[in-house]
Image (cartoon, rainbow over all chains, first blue to last red):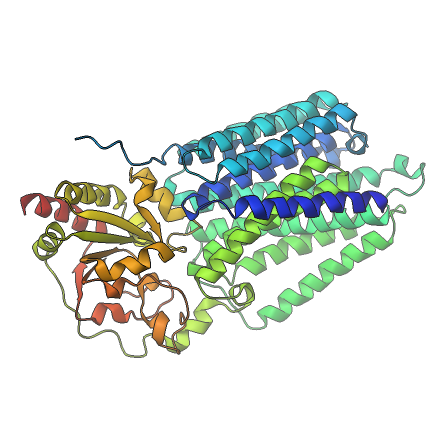
Length: 97
Length: 474
């Protein structure tokens, strides 16, 4: 329980940081924001690697392999699609005569 | 298991990952630095993943390799091929993948703890870990199943309209209750050797719940639900982090949870509806009362392309109000051409973006960016509304409900109170529309009957292309 409390502390503080940082993102970027945060929650791949690495019976192995694949889709797809969107955002072209 | 036995430098690497994620999001606060932000976040991800691979004793490499190769191929192909109009369903799918992964990780962790070996060392599943495992499994499953349904709706594989049936609330409630009961059972058993079926029954319940909770949500409410599912997955990942005692999962999950929640609130507010109302008061059911009571609009004026072109060409300021209809007709590139022509003639062209234009937060901005419209020309609702009275022409392309003045003054209207773009205050309003069909909400729009409004019927892209030609000739 002591562990849980320490971890909850981290969780709550991170929530506040999240609200603070995200509230500064302009509406123009809300779609890329969502796909970027999408990519970020792909960090669950770390968890998938950890359970996959522990090597246990067939059922666990099947679940792990699906978990790793899903999380990888999440990470790779998320960052790639965000990059694709963001490269389309352009400011005003420099005014030519 | 290895998850809890991280070495010091592994934890340090995770800290770096967390910091890079936060900085990445920080740089997303301006379009000029956003790309950099995305890349820093990706670097953070790489550091976290590589450290995990190197720093923990991974035994079954084949699982990792097979999973990563499949995932990379699928993710990359999907990301590079998706059309910008289809971005909401793509995000829904990626989101579902994350939620599903979180649920599976918790499941795998549970199975691991239920192995005989774990009992030799006393309690296999302390209360706190049991609780976080079942919670992350439940929320992850809801997010997974809900995202799939959202995808199917947005992709129009199934109807986008709300699906309702008698006793829906009661059925959903009972399933929720059963799911919670199974979860409580698992936690209170305290990890004594137990059959696995209650856990899978709980997972099944959560999956069904995810399906049922998105089914009654339709049409205009999709941006809210996409945001909400996003925050669910964030929460599920954070809970997985709590179950595995892994700080980087907790931090990242919290960041995403915060982001999703904030966007959910913004979207609900933009429609003047409480989240509760979005989730439990299916829009279709509400709107049928005030809808099309007047028997459809009568006094509408139709315009010709030449009329509109002349008006645009000799205007000082034109505000384009794009809606999802514009994107469906793939008219955004033609709109950009029209704006270029007008700007050549010295007309100021601005774009008014309603918060719920498009099918996810900020969707319209991405669609216009794709057509090379510079982002400084895009204005939020609050910034552009004071400008309509000084605007000669408001050009409404494929937008409907967000321009409906009934939201301001007709208390019986289902969209009453929803903030709208004050299009009707412009000198002239030109509405490009395929037909007199009503919008998502299925309600009449009095804007079309106003004396300063003209309708230009036809396919949005064809109409705008004609306008480009006519403006050139004017």
